[in-house]
Image 1: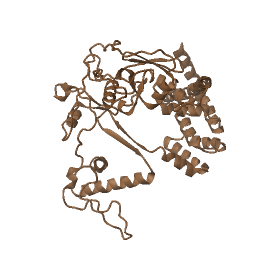
Image 2: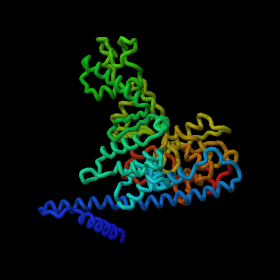
Image 3: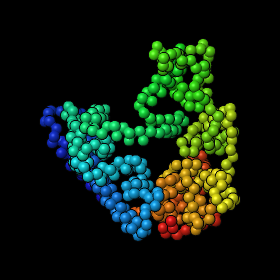
Image 4: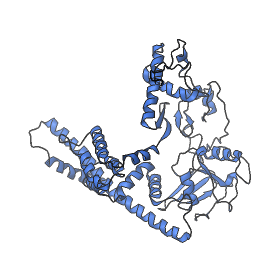
Amino acid sequence: MLPTLVTELVEAVADDLLAAQPDEARTELESMADADLRVVESVERCKAILDAVGLEALARLRSTIEAGELARFADLGRPRPAGWIDADHLTAMEVSTATGLGAHEVSSRLDLATARTPGAAALRGRLQRGAVTLYRACTIQAAIAALPSECGPRIVDSALRPKDGAPPSPSLFRQRLTRACLAADREAAERRRAARRRRGAYAQIDHEGLGVLTVVNDADKIIAAMERADAVARAARAQGDPRDLDSLRADVITDILMFGWPEPVGADVSPSGSTAAGEGVCRSASEWFTRMGRRPAATVTLVIPFTTAVGLTDAPCEVPGHGWVTAEHARRIMLNDGSTWRRLAVDADSGAAAHLETHAYRPTPAMRAHVEAVDGTCLAPGCTVPAARCDLDHDIPWPHGPTEVTNLTSKHRPHHNLHTNGHWLVRRDGDRVRWRTKAGRVYDTYPKDWLDGVRDTSLAPPSRDQSTGRRATDLEPPPF
């Protein structure tokens, strides 16, 4: 039934688009191409209309969650505890967990769905008419959120105004939006200060075994750093390095972070007395540049099956928290000068790290290392934050529950707060951690399968052992 309704909707929208086309004689091929193009256009319009429906549901979901949280908080009869999560974040986490959408993307949609400004209303109206994509609507809303509300509709019209009878291209859309926001921005200094709080550094490994390092910092610092890296790269080329400048710049930046500034370091001084960036960075005739691009000792955790380490198999290997590399790449890292190995015992059937016997009143470094090895990542649904960057959370809250490895779980701080403050209910039963969200959705999570991705896929999936002796709790709000 649903495919039929969608087909009828697409055809109806396509008919509307047909009526708007100029009446000119066309060849048969042109008519066929135009018919397919109208289907593509109509699908985009239908997607925008459906996205508008989704925004309305998202706003209602947020309202429902907020009402429930306000009632529950009133029942506590005391000040709001630390780590309490507001309705916006709870809604974003609920939707992100259910759909796989990023929490940031959901938050952008939620802001567009709930903002009570003329600009947001104009964007929602365009979505309901199929006149703007959800991506562009969210992009505009993010840009105008901190501006005076009366500027919103004008900026929306300016950014989305057609050009040459067609919607603006992506680059023109960005240019118009930036220009309109700068013209309307009466609090530019405060916005720049807010932007500074977004600074950070992020690393990710792609499917080809290459890594991407993203650094967000002040524009002048980024420009100066790139110019400095370019100067060293060009100096290496002048000394005879055959690599292209892009490769050299990449090696300069990573080498400086790993090993420090290339030697020998020379610096010309400008007439004003300041160091001239990029001048005389490496003036020596020695072959200093030949040391660029060398590999570091493996100081990161690298999951390599023994058969891969000795070259019997070529299964991909995992760098926890970052991604996967090829077997050949993993063996190169493993054999780098200074690399050290750490043995992690893994159950061959389930892929879970071996359970160690250790007990203490307070979590010790050994207990933390054990829980991190067993869990691998945060045990909240869909979360992939490495356990080493998580909190150790008592499944049965202390002092009601003991401080021992069978009552400790790795949880990313937001998910830790979900449990501690009773936003989501959590029950531990053996290796399984069962989560119940505000919408009543139930998710079961388990410790990391360290052989996932390298196990023979022809084998049946491993069964989870529920009899490990870990304590269970009822799905009731934990005590504070």
